[in-house]
Image (cartoon, rainbow over all chains, first blue to last red):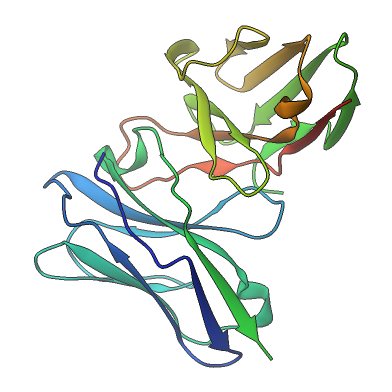
Length: 111
Length: 114
């Protein structure tokens, strides 16, 4: 699986958009970009995934660059409950392969 | 409740004890996983089961013994653990070969070895 690079930490004001970047320059054509988050001492939670096109669901939006070498997770209106570690993971076959977690980005939403 | 249930939520055991962690998924998935998360470290994949068959063992010490009797249940049997095995143990499930579906994780078992 391709490796990913994320900033170790970010801060965001409550109510503002949180934009979390991820670099995956060695991504292969059949690999998806997945985002999970882990709130303190809980199990990771699936957020969103994509292959080539931008995606949006009730939790977030995923913007993938045209060359697929990087992506951005957008939380449009961050709340205090969005404080968590966010993981960007690249994996083949749309999630049926094993997920390998890195260190992620610790997002702190401030009041 | 995520659809993946882990019990117990907390466990304290001595180094000579034998205990088991249980995971049950109610999602109809056919793959299950054990992860370990030590303090301030990334999640480490321990075992992978596809269709009840173990397909991956990431060099896990033999004091951890997984069991998957059917596609809905996964156990992790523990014996003669060390204090450094204290960690959050997470179970997850997924549907293999079904594009677009991620993993669903349980809430984990917080294990303390004394």
